[in-house]
Amino acid sequence: MDMVNISRMPGVRIGYTPHGIAGMRTYYVGASVPWKGVRGLDAVKAMNSAVGAGLEKAIKLSKEHREKGESLVRVLPGGRNAGAVLLIPTKAAKMMVEAETGEIIANYQSAWQALQAYSPMVAAPAMITA
Image 1: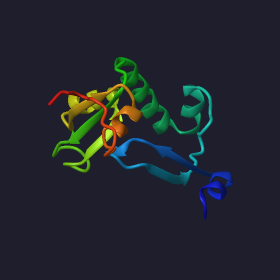
Image 2 (image 1 turned 135 degrees about the vertical axis):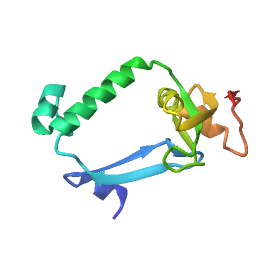
Image 3 (image 1 turned 30 degrees about the vertical axis):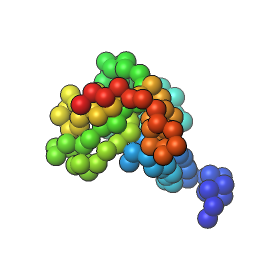
């Protein structure tokens, strides 16, 4: 199936993210969750209390971090896919450092700038932190 047909199917989602293995474009296809599009934490909790509790915790953690930009992170042995280098939002990278599951290799102002650093023709300067 092509991506246009998949994106038009009810209950199915398709998307693109610059995050994942550094230098690779990642497309994904998946089923939509029942609470997708539900407004308000209380409404999500009413549908699924476990998801609501997890969402509440994630919102709290996210509000504690206000860092901007994108970072290259090397996953440490305690993390999932140890040794992998990921491009993720800097606020998520800082959370990985706090959890001791990742180390920041470089920071960029945007995902575009980070991806350009992998282009053989154009290299964007990074603020190397390691």
